[in-house]
Length: 378
Image 1 (cartoon, rainbow, N blue to C red):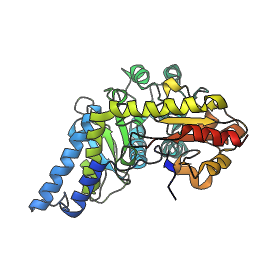
Image 2 (cartoon, one colour; image 1 turned 90 degrees about the horizontal axis):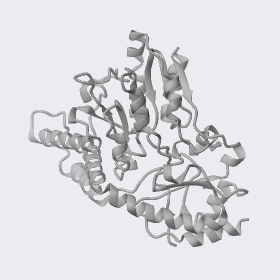
Image 3 (cartoon, rainbow, N blue to C red; image 1 turned 135 degrees about the horizontal axis):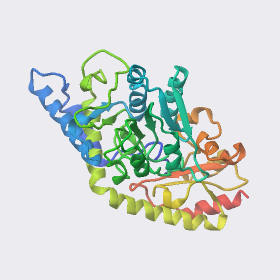
Image 4 (cartoon, one colour; image 1 turned 45 degrees about the horizontal axis):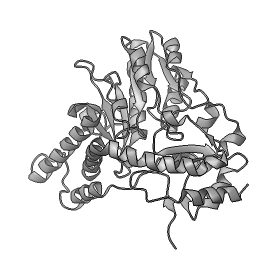
């Protein structure tokens, strides 16, 4: 029996073949510890890690020493947010700004600081899943420590107005962090704005393995953001993230970043072709789209067919496609999407939503067949 076509790339992507080759090379042949300074195995491992820093930095115009390796975007988000807490207390800057459409890996660290006495201003989203940059201007205060707004939403695929936000923050001392798990390597220009201080990256969203990511810390002049580590036990990663680096995963992430930088336009074009075919097939079903398509990344559709519950639809389509109805990080105990609720949808409406996400490696999809199956449920 053939497997269903995988349409859940926002949850995780397949390994790129070239990335796979790099991963296994450093797992099986160049297996040294990059912290071993007394022999050639360690030296070659260190070279691989430094190359990966260059490859990742090049995607967003960052320098080698501004790339810190982590286990993924969740850890990067926690380090970026919680790592600033001590500085905020020292300087009396206890005001934070976030949005209710963020991934839980941003929401929960902000909420944790809120419980510790920090004040958080939560910017609203409009019904299309986009933050109004003007609301940020109104929320900024002299004691604002951090603004954390994602580059693109993991559920809806909606790009946020990062350039406008960066422009508003010019001349203000607040640090600007963006969770770029879904955008890194895909929305290239979006993340090259030098006003973005902290960028969270996830390997398994750009065809690298799970379990590796990065936090990019842009310097202001000669000063990097004043983060404190979340745990201790070594001086690795400039003292910010102790522990032996997984060289194979780091090298694989570097290769994935390099390929993404080279091929993002070709990949985008292929993803747009898939999206256009999906939109054409679904048009007669009058779906409700969550997000304006011109503001949404080309590899994502979040939509609902009114009157059809998402769980029932996923079961009805499971022999054809593998899809989801929200973030993989919260799917073990399904509740209505906090993102859609923040956009103004009711529980019932949120429970109708499904997310389709594909990539340049996705085979041809029988969109007309999918549409026919949906039509049979009405």
